[in-house]
Length: 123
Length: 198
Image (cartoon, chains in turn green, purple):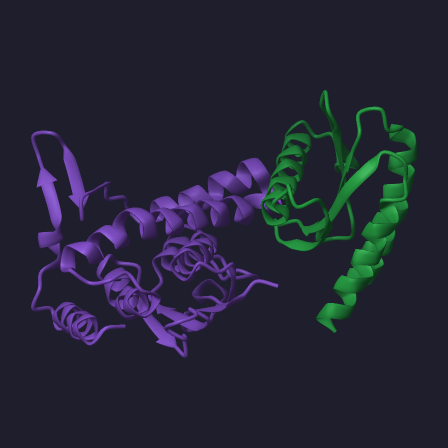
């Protein structure tokens, strides 16, 4: 059973690779445990899961502090890449890594769809 | 494990368990410099409730991700303890560093350091896999002292990370640790499952 839901999440992550500019993705719990990942061996997936949860958690508490409502997504843009994360159900986060020139609108559209699929699998 | 090592390990364990040896003798206090060393490792004594305060602080800043930070801290501490303290102290006792030796002594040493009573319930002393129980777990007790009321999920994130780092470093394999029962959720004692990472 555990393997099958991980397999299904893996499939959603593999699909994301087909979106231009996305080169890695992961589904993690809000408290930082790795559910599934599609990342290169250069990235420590478990550490990245903890970092993603920390980044998301810190953003959520900051938004809460300034009474800005719930966090819809987090986008971090760097010179060599960008990170986009979004909630995937009540207890999970979907995060993708993309190239700097990857179109943000398309990424947001595709990860929105993927996050809903993951939320359904994890329900 | 060599026969001499087995005997030495059993002796050290027995001496510590029966209280014949005062573990404070392994500590060097220097009041002039204001330092404490345990087995040559610079140490400091903190109240256990500081851990509960740390839990509160990371949750305040990182929200749901608090456990991830505490586990990461614990994992690195566990690895460093193996590299810096355990290897050195076993050398000091003239015992070879082997998983079976370390795992034979781990429960009694950590219990001496106030972590609670550590019980190996079916831990394989070669692979480190199995179930570990802690009665009077310091992290759970600290949380119950500062943050009143039972919790929904296990809370010993530092210890979970520490066991992962410690056991992985000793065996040289990537292990996963999950706290399946916790005193903070109303269980009698904390219970950790240690398995090979997938």
